[in-house]
Image (tube, rainbow, N blue to C red; front, side, top):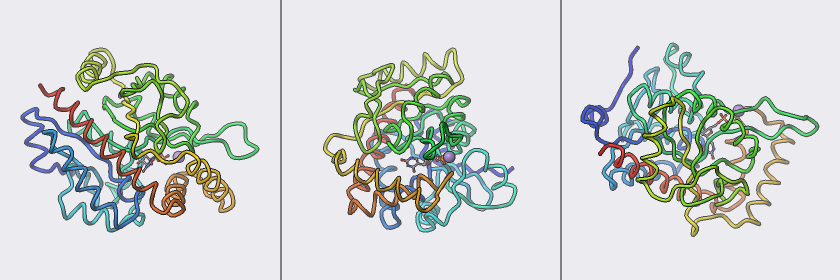
Length: 303
Ligand code: PSU
Ligand code: MN
């Protein structure tokens, strides 16, 4: 099967230099067209500024591609939501049928690991959704969690969105033996907000302790590791605005009968339009901070 790794990424991996994987779903589906291409560039620049090599991942015309070129980033960002959202289970069909798609945390983790990349930066993980009204439980659990349980990848994120059942998400990560570390915090962040009100089991305060933890974990376990890095304080969303948009967004999903993998993109779109772009600025700031931190850890790990 064709598998394309950008020469710069392949060279860095061969020389054991630090590489940071980035996902393409957050570009294509998580941010409005018009903002995503600039962020893609800034993410790469932030990783390079720390001494790392960025590797954005997608599937293009049936080829899993690790390290998108400028032209390929143009394409992924221009196609945006028209591009299929590929989770891990979708990789086989997309490859076999010659299709293109943006990769989620799950699919990006699988391809990054296969390419030999162990460090990954993103915005928010998928998780356990809230049950539909009247239902006691939900079967809508993101494949991100199962893949992180089975894949030795270290992922920096800003927690999960408050549209998810955060307590249940943390329970699944615990049950699946995925360590969750808080970066300079004791609270698991909720993407737009610095705290979800749920505690993290472990707190780490600098990239060296993070790298040491990743190394120690990899000595005895094959699961992934989550580092939860809260959005920088100056970019946190106003809590009252956040709570209003969340309530409105949930009503909207219910009215439109949206379910499954469409839930996250539709909700994000509501946040972006109804906040007049404030949520986009928060989203961009947190992903950038995560790329920078992931690069610092990757640099430390490579020493
Ligand atoms: N959460 C966000 N922004 C995103 C996503 C999640 O705040 O863009 C994307 C990520 O790619 C994540 C995916 O892996 O959604 C999870 O989707 P699902 O719940 O359908 O597995
Ligand atoms: Mn889902």
